[in-house]
Length: 620
Image 1 (cartoon, rainbow, N blue to C red):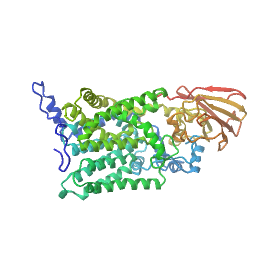
Image 2: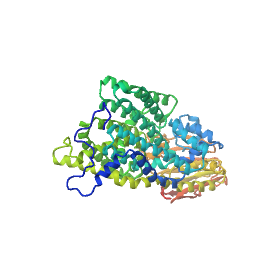
Image 3: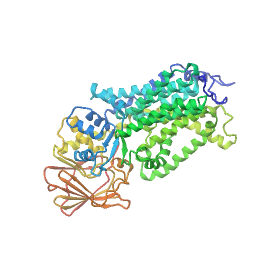
Image 4: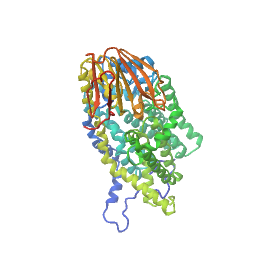
C-alpha cells in the first residue's frame, strides 16, 4: 500500500498478485511474490550481496590501499605526502612547490602540470580509513570486512527506500534484488580505497528515505525532526563523496513529480537540501578542493566547459554500463580501435532505453523522480573516466525504473505503445535489461569484487624495483603505469627498506621508445606517438596543456628539456642530462620488458636502443 499523499501508480502498472493464472502449473508465483514482499527481504538481500562479495578478501591490499596505509601512519615522510595530497583522496594540492617536491620524490612524473589540483574532500570517508589505521592498519581482512559492512547497510537502506516509495510489493522487491546483486558494486566493495562510494551511498539513501517519510505523511502528522534528519544525513553523504549531490536531485524529483499539494510548499520543503548542496560546493571550492588541469579528473565547478565536453563523450558509456554490458571502463581499457564502435553501441542502447521508458515516464510521477536523480548521477559520474564503480547513485533510480517497466510489459499496461514494433522494442528491452540484472549480474558480482586483485603483480614488480635500487638512485626508463613507480618509496617505508636516493621515471605508458646516447651524461628519448596519448595517462596533466619546445624541468642531479612535439602539441621527444656519467655506479637502471622490470644498460655513445611499449599484463 502506498503512503498517503503520494501519487499512485497507474492502475495497469500493478505488482504481481501472486495468484496463478488459470490452468497454470505449480505454485511458484505465489511463493515468489511472498518472498519479494517479506518483511525481512532487505536483510536477506544484504546477506546474499555480502556473501557474493566475499572473494574480495582474497584481494588483500591493492594500489591506493598502500598509499593510504602509508599516509595515515607515523612513518617518516608520511605527513609530507599527506600534505601534498591534502587527503587520502587526491594526488596534488595545487601548490607549485609541493607538486615539484612530488616530482623530486618520485610521486609524480616529470611532466606534471605545475599547478595541478586533484584533491577531493571526503572527511567522513577518510575517518573510516583512519579508524582502520588506528585499530588494524596491517589487516587487509578486517579492512575488507569494514567495506562489506557498508555494503550490507546500503542494501538494507535501499530496500527500505524502494518500499517507502513503491509499496511492499513485487515492483519494489524486484528493484531491490537488482540493486543488491548489481555487479557494478563489486569493484568498490572489493577495493578498500574505494570505500567512500559505499559510505556516501549509504548516507545518501538514508537521507532520501528520511525525506520521503517526512513528506509523505499527512500534513498534520509531519515531523520536522525527520526532515532535519534527512538534511543531516545528506550532509553526511556529501562529506563522504561528491556523487551524493545526486541525492538532492532525487529529492527535487520527489517534490516535483510525486508529492501532492501546492508547488510552493513542496519546493520550500526541498529548498534547504538544495541549498545545502550549494553551500557544500562553495566550501569545497573555498578550501581549495576539487580538480583542475588534469585530463582524467574534471571538476564541473572549476572547468565547466571542459566538463560539459566530457559529458558528451563519457555519459553514453556510463549508461551502457548501467543498463547492460560491456562495462563502462571498456571505453578506456579496451583497444583504441574499439572506442568508436563501442560509443555508437552505447548511444544505441541509451536511445532504446529512453524510447522504452518514455511511455512509463509520461504516466508515473515516481518514475520521473527516479529518472531525474539517475540522470543527475550519471552526469556527475562524468567527472572521471567511465567506470562501473561510478554507478552506485545512478543505480538507485535505474533499478526501480527497470522494475516498473518490466511489470508494465508483463501486465500489458495500456499506456505502452499500441503498434507492434515499438511495443516489441519495449518488451524486449525490459526483458533483456531485467533478465541481465537478475541472472547475469549475480554471477559477475563475485568476479568484480575480486577484480582489483588482477593488479596483484604490481606489488611484486615494485618490490623488485626497490631491490634493484639498493638505496641508490633508481632510473626507470619505461614503466606500464605510474603506480609501478610511485609505489616504490611507499613500499620502502611500509616494509622498512632503504628508500632510493632519487627516483626518476623517464617514461610510462604503452609508448614505443627510442633511447639515444648523445654524450657521456645525456639520453635523448623519442616517444613514438607522443606522451599523454591515452586518457588514463592524463591524470597529472591534460593533453591540451602543452609543454612548448624548450620547456625545462630542473631536478636534483637531472636536467630535462622538451625537444620535439607532436602535431597536436604533445611531447614527442625530450633530453635528459644527468649530473654524472650514465655508467656511474650510483645509478641503477631498469626498464619494463614483458611483464616485469629488467636491468637496463645505457647505450654506447651515439647509439640508439628501441624499446617496445610497456604494457600491463593483468593476472594473479
